[in-house]
Structure formats: structure tokens, C-alpha cells
Image (tube, rainbow, N blue to C red; front, side, top):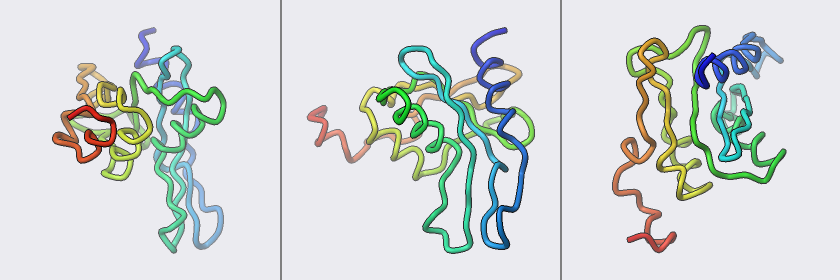
Length: 140
């Protein structure tokens, strides 16, 4: 079993879409991140009618990583609904891209799986080029 299959299998356990209330749904998108130490953390999406409480699976997985270990550097990430990402699937939204960049500058090099079958990945820095925060990290 390679690392992507391991991450997929762990995240897949979180996939069981449910309506928590008439206003809140959860577990309909899942994700796994691998930290710098090699540990894998999972997360699931939770969305509410007001929008303010929405959290993507990717951010929940990263927050789970941070809360449990204090780590902020992500090496790999996979996100999906009921099946693994295919043909440029599994892309994090803009808020998640920004969150990962702000969490740790080195996350720009994280691999994001976009096609499970071919193991095609994209790096975060390619999804958010010329990032405004380089100046704050004194990288410009």
C-alpha cells in the first residue's frame, strides 16, 4: 500500500454524509493530510445555512494535525467525496489554499493529489502563484 492509498483509506472512513439538523450537513467531503513527521490526519466538511460556520475537510484535517501535534507543515493532501479524485479533482478551495499558505510557508511545496489512478499531483505554489504573503514571510 502506497502513501496515497493509506491516506485515501483513512479519509474514506469519515465519508458518511449526514444532516445534523435542518441547517447543518457534514461528512460529505473528506480529506487527509500527511504532516512533516509522517503522521496522517483526517477531516470532514461541515456546512451550515449561515455560511459563517462552514469548514472544509482540508482545513479540519490540518487543524486536527495542529491540535494533536503542534505541527503546521503538510507534505501531502487528498480530498474527495464518495470516490478518489480523478482528472484534476480534489482541488482545495481558495480559502483552504490561503489557509495552508498562512499556516506554514513550506506548505507551498505540499503535494495535492488530483488523480488517484495516475497519482498525479499539483503543488500548492502552482495553485496560488505570486502569493501576497511572501513579503510577510520575508521571502520576496
